[in-house]
Image (cartoon, rainbow, N blue to C red):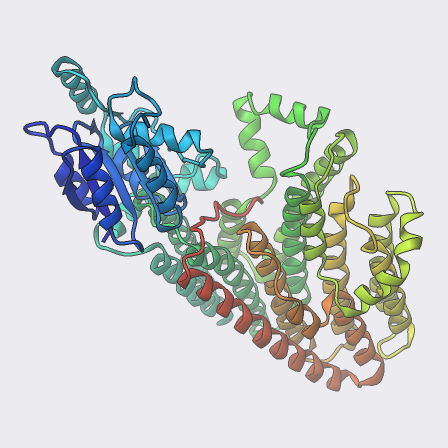
Length: 605
């Protein structure tokens, strides 16, 4: 149980002790700085500890924000400071300075907790100070100030602020106006019954899988039920994040589950629609796979651009300045958020079209909408990259290299091409990735199944891919390299499966692309969590993007169409097993060892 140490002169009628106990703290009273230091040393080393001024006046949610958020090793609000086990020694050192002879860091500050916070700042510690807004947190110096603080507390509805803060500040139109107004109350209902965000996330996944099963029936009733359940799944998807923010239940495992389950739900639903269409005699597997490829490539563009630029210096451009100006015009903000077809708008469109039309029409609308939004966002980011004078860091180059997912073939060839790559102009890096990928996809599409063309093109693709990553990816448009690689690999699988023209080839290709896409999303979430890329043995085991593309082309040349379908199925199962087992092992282990708690605020598009 976490420990809270109350310091200073107790105030008759104060509720601070009961409020701390309601937040789960074991409360101890300290008579002075020396007693506080003693109690701090006795507190369990594997639990959070807080030092709180007994005169504190404020909202319970201000205390909750300041003392219970698991994402920050050190945090403070006026009159209270807390440390998790990883930062305990920093707190002890600051406390010792305050208790030593002449060790006062902020002598004008009457509150011991605030003096400790000042000492932590002086030591250069990273102390998180939550944004309290209208919430009150104060240590009144006299009865009049205490009375004024209590009146300020009474004037603000603590629960209303807490509910409002549970909703993301930046979200899509559908989520903001059609879901969040009531899903926040579902989140509060879940919190009061002890449910966790992970449980709600799992419920959302189960609901979406049931929706996919309903769509797979191929009946009008099944399609209507699927649309309704998909919306219900999205409501729960919003609820889990709001529950995490409402109750501050953030975790590494929860962020991973939330992110990966979103992809699993959407792509399982695509498969359900394709199965339902097949029951009605319409084969839309190519459209379903195309939608998954397009959506995944959109996300890779977002991820790559953000990783390339989030820590770049001199990172400004006229295009970015124009975007900031448009943000000051209210209606343009919502139009631009809807244009990118975020998850709320996208799922609402899919649900309505599923209930009212056919799977084919649903996929056509999805492909057109996603293609338009992908063109809009990618064009804007290309313009920003060309007009800014950003200096990218080694960390950004490493992240882009990890996102590229180069296997042993590209790595070996890149070592031999490093000197030649340095002599090429900067723009050639993404150009090589684009041309090599376009060559293998176009050759597969324009030649008959079983011909040698795709194999030759795949060998060229290995060489161009190696040349593209032979030097650090620090160029203005080098963030395009990973999405070009993704598109090349996924589209090659799609085209060759379609060329095979045998029943079951496209569903097998769908499974293979889904397994590989999971690996790529998992790479993104590891990098986002500062956990590094997946281990090299995993990348080498599944071949890297160029190795898998080459293997697929070799199989297309050597096998019959039916054998190719079987090979795709075996590859899909093998890749899925390897990446899932390693991913689950990693994230569960990270959660158990107390990795920093994070929360994914949702997909960027």
